[in-house]
View 1 (cartoon, rainbow, N blue to C red):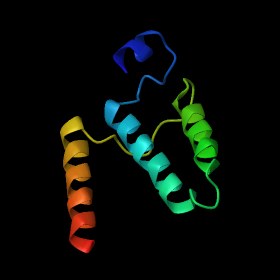
View 2 (view 1 turned 45 degrees about the vertical axis):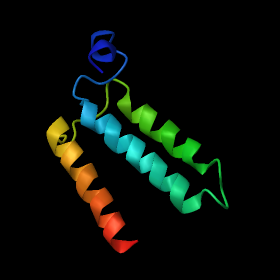
View 3 (view 1 turned 60 degrees about the vertical axis):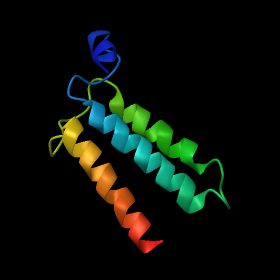
Length: 84
């Protein structure tokens, strides 16, 4: 992410945890619609990648820190395990 920022190919206000959340969202789309629409995730990947480009509007809220992102993922996985 640092190299992409320096190269000015992504927004300067993007954080590493943003990429983790985007990957999680794309995986969720594949989980929800993958059986009937196996390529749908590609639409939302394109949408998210377009949002990473420089020049977009300011974000309404701050990104999670890397530590908070990791904690959120652990908590989510633990919750899924408890249900299963």
